[in-house]
Amino acid sequence: MMIHPDFQGAMARERSATMAAAAAAHRQARQLRRAGQLRLAATTPGVAGQVVLRDGSAVLIRPVRSTDAPLLADGFARLSERSRRLRFLGRKNTLTEADLRYFTDVDHHDHEALGALDHVRGGGVGIARYVRDREDPGAAEIAVTIADDWQGRGLGTELLARLSDRACQEGIGRFTALVAADNAAVAGLLRSSGAGLVRRGSGTAEYEIDLTCGSVRADRESA
Ligand SMILES: CC(C)(COP(=O)(O)OP(=O)(O)OC[C@H]1O[C@@H](n2cnc3c(N)ncnc32)[C@H](O)[C@@H]1OP(=O)(O)O)[C@@H](O)C(=O)NCCC(=O)NCCS
Image (cartoon, rainbow, N blue to C red):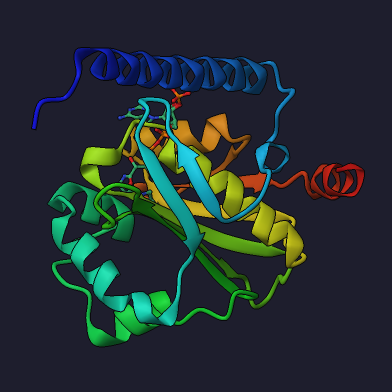
């Protein structure tokens, strides 16, 4: 079927305007973060919904469901060996049935997970979770994984911001993250989200983020 050139031109203009707007928003958020005016939780308008990333691609973010095991298994199968190693701090070739159950059958209180789906193709492209610390219920450990071909588009930042909002809603005020010492990408993600390095271990680094939960509540109340 022939597509009229006027229509093609209009589509191209709209797409480039969307990309320009996303890039401008990203630049502004980065400047604000650097100036210390924008903390993680304060960037979060809501938890679920469609998000246009800075390159113009779109994802649907929503809480993970117990029926998502096949989606997670498929996403893991497409993950590079390096990304698996960085996520699990060691070699991880498969997710067992028990792993899949643990990662998807979450109670949305002590354990929350948010997934991102490719808005066009529908596959899983990212996931972020927190698991509350049993000894210190005001804190939770986090993990974030983005599909290799979706890394560097701002999706990790977006998921972490939304996860921090969910954590605040559940009375969690601090995130901890234990990561590989050579993981420059997650160090950048955590730092730009307000985290500080608190400890170095052998081959690992531990970060903490104090969530600005008060401002989330204030934003919501004034909305
Ligand atoms: C770490 C990870 C979650 C980052 O997600 P992402 O969506 O690629 O990150 P973003 O695009 O939101 O980037 C956020 C910041 O991280 C930093 N960053 C991202 N990729 C980077 C890279 N390859 N090198 C250095 N810094 C990088 C930048 O500071 C960036 O900020 P900027 O966009 O303002 O420049 C992703 O790379 C990943 O899934 N890696 C494999 C699994 C893993 O390491 N998980 C973390 C352990 S729990």
